[in-house]
Image (cartoon, rainbow, N blue to C red):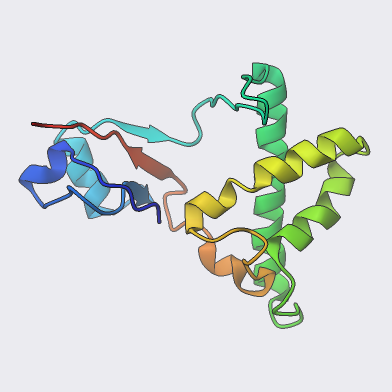
Length: 159
């Protein structure tokens, strides 16, 4: 979970001046329900996104969409593979190791492979550990709970 200090309209229900600003799962989730009732702005990851490259330039929307699709496709495949083969996977095999294997199936272009691997690093921000240290053996445990959505709370600062 991402632990940034936030202040939101949820403050009236609980002190949210520090702590998580992510909502995992959108169905039967009391925090998501409170956010909706209090008109707290949320953003869902399925919405379009802007990707800034390593030189600080915004990627073309089409390229960003293809890149995002490739990265999330490998992540989805890793969840399935981890879930189905956890007993046989070496605990030292990382999510990055899996990405390095799978990226070759996505594209033969070495520069695009490098961009996909660079973008894959963002997953570490979701779970708080770099993907080089995340064990593929236990990766299935990170899968999103029911509802299939990760929500990001919009921080609102009050004086």
